[in-house]
Length: 548
Ligand code: AMP
Image 1 (cartoon, rainbow, N blue to C red):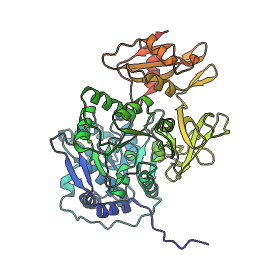
Image 2: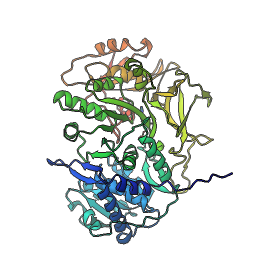
Image 3: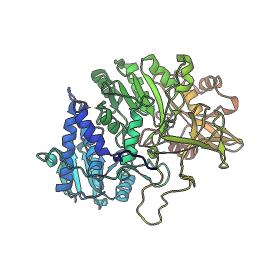
Image 4: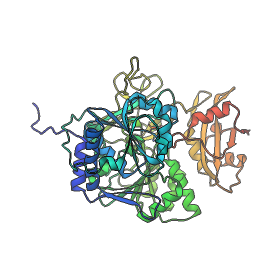
């Protein structure tokens, strides 16, 4: 028997029309570096999204599921693009502005982008590449920045504001199939070519509902979220969509991502929530330690994208800011887990839950697979590769050219689950603790050492700002850990002191013999420790390593 219920498609269009009417007064505030930030209501953004759709279709000829790319910071025009492009049936392709030029060229060509919306301040990045991007017919520039870099380049150039001005403020949005592509994002591609993940209207809609649940971020129209995580990185963790569903105000940092302006905007605009990777919170902590600011408005912060060191969580607890750990990937939209502790616990009992990556929502099923492909129990001890499936999890990659493997066997199991490449344990009550990336785990004499475990223990030392641990070849043990450490300004701890400190919390056989102090840990385009760079630096003898 079939149900008697209506079958209304789950679309970004619905998110847009709902947000601009029911929550029309909510605001997107964009930091400008001027005394006053720029403010635009959801109603206004909705109207301008219609104007943008008209401009793209009527003036630039965007049709069907053509790709419209963005090379933009987090700002209100980028939100307009997020809503207009999928709603008109086209596909939004967010470009990561921190990628090396070669990868950007590869990605734009692979996705066959027809239009690029770009912030003026990013023209020096885009303009020199345009002659290698044959599919790009139009460039649309918004916001401040010198336009002269575009002089004489091939595609037609438009000013965003001029292009949308005077066009109708409503649009006859088409009826879309909810399984249709809405947006795409390429993985950061630490190995091989980047891989395109294509989100559907349905996956975005369901993911947004999950982000809004109290067991996840649980925000309402009384909240303001500071969206530091870039819109080019997994749709800013789904926040622009989720907020339009519930009227949460957004505070957008634009290009002002350094610790000092972030601290200033928190003090002035008083967001109640924020989302960013650990390196941002490390930087902000150092900033407010040196020059105190009032962060007390931020009741909760979602932190993920890389492991959150417990010491960082403790430091923010002292400032009255509660960090909530989350795990996800480009392939998982990204919300995979969040570490809200179970009910009925004291603060002290909550702690061991808070430092896990968190538990899975109903939309994400998980299993652990051992090295021989065996299924491992959820006992908090058996470590294996995490595999997931669910309504907002990728089942394949985007591909065009012949011979491209869109379901590589190292990424998808035979029965269709996503192999995350993350290694960890799951407790009997469903909390995930990641111990490593499969490729980062240190295999020493037949035992596994968790690089993340060592990093967290080293970062708990008061003199340490950051620490990254990688596996390096060792004649006797196969691999051993190399600890690279960034000291806080003025700190004096030496290797022996660090090792003695580490010995208090780590088994003796796991203690690194090789140590090096570095000015900064190399980071990937999305702000994570770039361990392959450290491994290469070590192999090339570029690091000044002390052996204890
Ligand atoms: P990306 O697709 O660039 O967002 O990278 C996803 C990867 O980031 C995951 O597979 C994990 O290795 C890592 N990651 C994300 N969140 C966390 C977290 N909370 N703890 C540890 N690693 C994380």
